[in-house]
Length: 587
Image 1 (cartoon, rainbow, N blue to C red):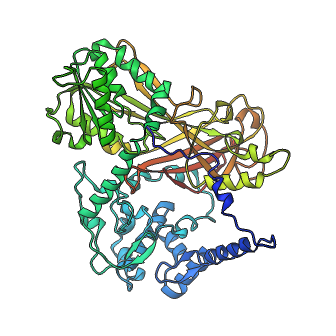
Image 2: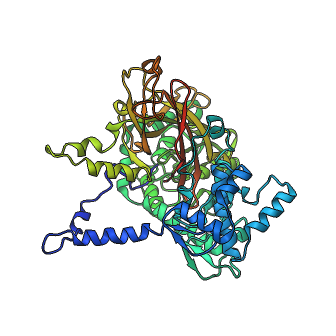
Image 3: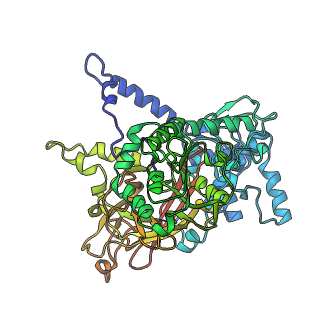
């Protein structure tokens, strides 16, 4: 299952062309004025940690903090031995303290900290990895000039996911969305004070000062409901369901798992979470299930699934005497809609996967259904999910198109688009020929046994250049995809795999593309052996023989979204290392 709107390689719409305004005399005055406005904004992009002053660079900001507020950022980092993430959290911690108390003193805190010889800093809490100010440029620039770290220091850090798991536990109120991670499965707020400590505090709302306002669990609930309504409403479009059903790789994998494993389905009670049109429920009824509970939160699609079940004479009522019943409900609230006993389901089936596997955060609902309704030892379909990663080259970008447009060089557009994609994930079909490294396993999930908090993860992988290569190639980023398995643990007669790999026929999920801020030159070690190469690792002069990745995926503060962080370290054939700054993407 994937969302209605895909992000494509060229994100510029033709409609924008009509909005470009040239002056009557054909000059570029409007553009120049716009550029000037942009320059004015850039000149004051960095906000002081202690006051409202703005600066054009990190250096000038830190100098001001040192001279005017007695805070030496670089000195503190060195004295306290703070790595990138600890420093990142320190900035957010200071901003949060100053927001609560303008007279807050770093000096007083440092004195107490050093006297106590306490190694647990107050900014060690996970919530300080979430930017206190939205679009805080300082967070992504303070380490630009750092010297390269040793690989041990870069990879032995505390798992980033431990800092991301509680992104919702904030003192920041976002008008559009408040974190799912602050909610329990029944939609009630765990700790409202963490989210909305509003008394006598000037709040930061979407990066702007705002007067205090009443905040409570009802506000959180309204935002969650709003996102859910939009999410389930997006699946009311028949076009989406046609796209998913027409995806033969997807639909036939589920069909085969349900129809070709009679020992599993015959006489079983089946639950289909997020049934949509009811296609999987229809397969289950056809396979001989004694009861099929199709759960669908979209009111429109629940009615559609009911009508389809009746038309195919499998609906469970006096007229049709079938086995299929449709519950218009979220699975977490199912007991309000139908009579069903806990742990009474033999087979739980769901097509829950989103882009990058975890987008839409539907897996947590499936795991809730597993824990609440599935019998001990019952089957979950699919029962495994595996994420893979590989590096992609120039052919997977828009650069080749813009380099030759009817004989004209428009590569400047392609380069600008590529720069933009380094900030946002792209969903697109990547061809095998455009991969420049071998694939690597990133993360595996056992859906029959995993816990809900294991949906968020941090994993490492090493990308090796394709052995067939005889020269260096640029790796412009990484592509993520997934396989889901209907293994012989439950599908004993006919196990099968649903793959979204670039090596197999494309699916509606395509692949998820994360673009590096700077391409990394790579070449097999066999090509580089024996050479003494000068220059930075990953450049044309000194290609990397492997790329070490550290990837974290976590449910974002915006309900049903995910955050992906990406770290890349290039390793030369001589063991030299170069680490690039962490990139954070939101999907």
